[in-house]
Image 1 (cartoon, chains in turn green, brown):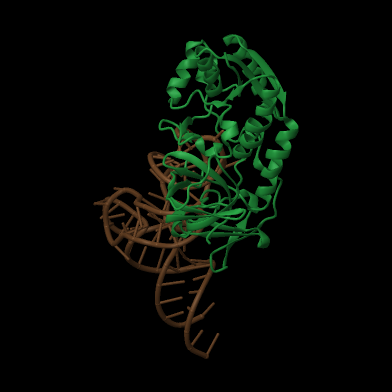
Image 2 (image 1 turned 30 degrees about the horizontal axis):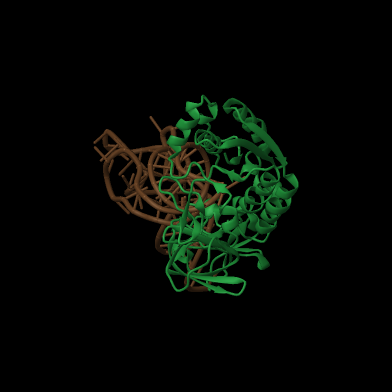
Length: 337
RNA sequence: UGGGGCGUAGCCAAGUGGUAAGGCACCAGACUUUGACUCUGGCAUCCCGCUGGUUCAAAUCCAGCCGUCCCAA
């Protein structure tokens, strides 16, 4: 009987994952990461209670230091640099599939499981993550590799949220009704500026450099943003660029948001990259993957869309799919090449 | 202090006698492990610079005033 440790967040998905594994006959235990914030650590007692109800052991891992170093710190630095980071990507890379996995193995577990919506399949000799139709979170999993995939189970793969809720309801868990989490976990009751701090106000300019108004600090904007600019114009204005060096935020029209070619760094491929084929690339969570070519150049990787895509944003992850499988991804580091 | 134009919600702006379009901004909700995008809804409490007049009825016509812009001196 394989021993599996489920990363429990106190939410519906990971709870259902644990229940499913139990039913499949695994020896299951749950563990929750303490990340050092009241908002995140509220999950610990919640997950513990769920584990008690379904009759499995529960561990508590104190990863506040790792979280602060690998998630919070880059989050702050990126925002202050005028980029838009996705902390979930780092949390998965360094915490769930880093520190958590390591600890699980140390405790004698052979595998770990999470409540991510994505499927693991064997294809062409490699373990691959396939996009799932109902709901898909493969976007945040691009930093996985073969070694990790061998030790990972994603039990809710291919299910709908409704099905997952029913599984929890079937065990009489009140978490079945719990609302989906939305914001970044550590920001539940706080504002961005509590973490990032205030960045200096500066000018909103148009693409020719004319001043359109004042912005409240570059950390408050992301490419493609329309809301919160407080500027009235004949047509909606969007943030088209953030020039950190000049503390300027460039505004333009919808049509100015499209980018064809960009560059990623810190990339990872879950399995070896095939060459000279057309991939599909998503540049934001929930963005539809679109046709593109991918070319590795040393420590960087150039991605060129067949058709320009909206709001390619520094700091966000570009995630590459090959034939429905998650090939890999990286952090967008240059745009409008 | 001669001539002309304009004054409609935070901004822009339709509407020239029949009882206030639209866009932007903003707000709310939906969606969403990124305060983004998107979608849906709301948004001038008899109100159209002010005051008075004409009319069954005016933001729309008339008069005066105030404000503002342009031209000429």
